Image (cartoon, rainbow, N blue to C red; front, side, top):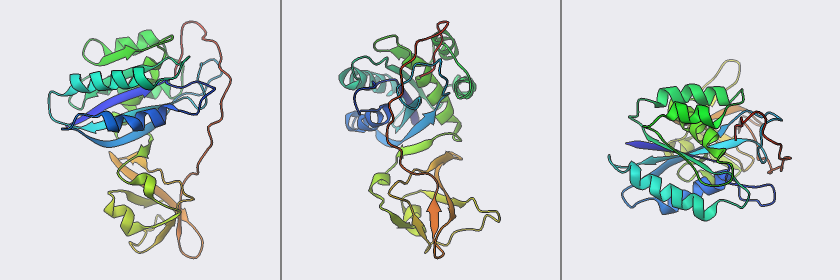
Amino acid sequence: MRYYLGIDDTDNAQDNLGTGKLARWLEGSLPQECSLWGVVRQQLNRDSRIPYTSHNSAACVVVKGPEGILERLIQVATQHLLAHSLPGSDPGLCAAGENEPRLAELLDFGAKCSNRISSQQEAMRMCGSRVHLSGHGGTNDGIIGAAACVGLTYSGWHGRFIEFGKLREIGSTVKVKDLAAMDILVTSLERDAEMPDPEDTVETNDWCRPRLWGDKPVLPLLRGRNGSWTSLGQKRNKAHGTMTTEIGGTASN
């Protein structure tokens, strides 16, 4: 079964270790009987009143494992956060298995955090006593984004993959059939939504990041040059934003 481990606010404005990278590193600490399905980045509300480091994103580590291993995963993730979160950060962790009934409510909470300011108290209320939610330093504001990204990822329709199989080994060009062999689907965003041929080439600009659509990694494409396709998006350097102060006891990291 799948387990969702939401992580947020583990970085600071001085260093280059973002939450996404820390989340991807968790794969190396997983129990032997577990495997990484993927890591999904979720974009949360960009509001000047919210104290975030650069882009206000959170990451959800999706793990495949046997029933009954959630507590072990929580221990591993907690140790990982304590070992790698940067000074001055406010790390948060949310964890749940796919059969947890409260995940539907966390989806609603995640949708709110994508557009509005939310509080720690609201995150704790949404998780209740069944969904694990814990802060591990600073103000603990990371619990807000951690809970939000678990709900959004559980929906199967939000976010983009920053880790999935050999995703990061894909170069500047790749065949549609080779993406399919990696279990990455493609879809055309052209007006007539024509279907790309397996032999068609996709230009990635060295940045291939499928979206989480229909609970699968899907790469959106536009027509490129000479009959090829171009994947949507491009790499963005981490731009350190100015940390703002919290207003009214609310934040969404």
